[in-house]
Length: 221
Image (cartoon, rainbow, N blue to C red):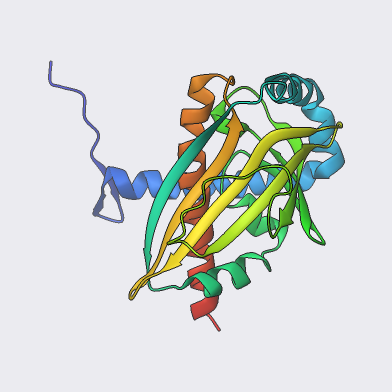
């Protein structure tokens, strides 16, 4: 018997696996957006209330330890500068915030903060937290890289109550061709190691999409 293989054709033209996967992913995001829009914020919170409690408890209990660990991802961007991206990013509507990652359930922007329901580190179910965008941290002194002068910083607290030791600490540096980005979420150290490691992939996925959406929005004007 021959080795398993698929040869797909549409309108007489061969369709390669990558093209098919891209189309599948596109339709999956459309289905997710319909699902999230239909349920709404209230419906999503009710549907996942047990998972939210479990994830919130995990983050809260881990935050009783004073040690930190970073989940870092680096991006080299050409064709767009830091200010262009940040200005566009801060004007994204919720559907674009959803579109950045399949595990973004709610990203509800308010003045100076966002309510977020997402699965952190591809681990377990979603948690529900609020991120406050700040100029600097008042109770935390992270080792910023002085070569990356522009920052997107966020203090995070659980909506169920209580500030946790989890912070957004993204740094940007313009280059001749675009920018370098150091993405970083600081976590309590005693969370599961796979959760920390997988959140590096979460950052890569969401910022790949946000950066692409921002670039397309800028050049559509």
